[in-house]
Length: 130
Image 1: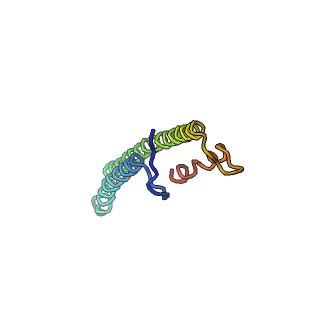
Image 2 (image 1 turned 90 degrees about the horizontal axis):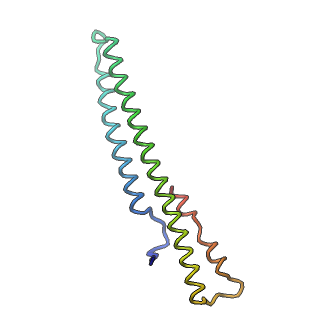
Image 3 (image 1 turned 180 degrees about the vertical axis):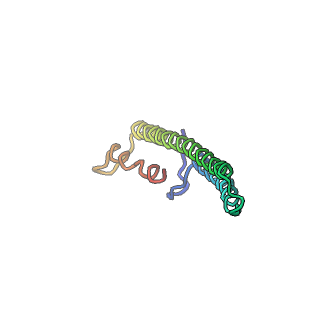
């Protein structure tokens, strides 16, 4: 596996950006639908108030809330799986680096070991952006 570091600044992987965009799109769509229901509720004049009509609008809002929560739960699970995948990929990269340093008998400065180099490669960037 060949990895090239293009810049030191962390950016989200493509897959994570896609998941965030999907979540945002779903949230905006549900927001727009909710807004329509609230506008219908606001447009009801006192002489139009009927229990079944109000209950129907409130049920519509509840259904949209449930849909929003379901979508959010799906996207969260997707992001968690992506996060775990990234951690596994980083572990594989670290192991690959360890093997290469050993195979090529890397010349290290005094007091520096392969382990200290690998300890410097943390999951902090991945974890801080999850």
